[in-house]
Length: 75
Image 1 (cartoon, rainbow, N blue to C red):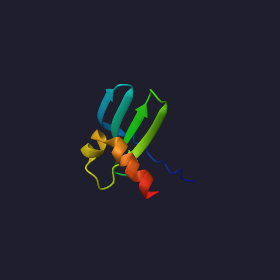
Image 2 (cartoon, helix red, strand yellow):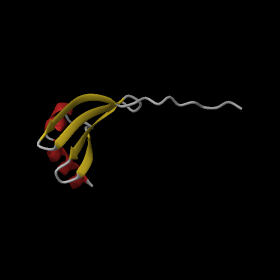
Image 3 (tube, rainbow, N blue to C red):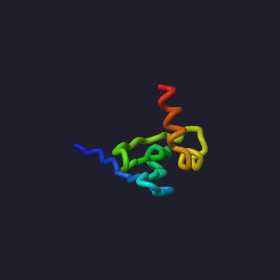
């Protein structure tokens, strides 16, 4: 019997900023080669992720609430 070992590759932080109780982090998942932006708003106690998809990654990083709205509209 041979065990299948899948290596765990952690996500890599590409950019991070924090202002007025809001943390925004751009992360790259090397296993899937996808980028997403994670937002944590400590003031209101909410967090969400925004997949970058075909958008400019820095644009999503700088305007995550706009792109989160686009995700909501597409759902």
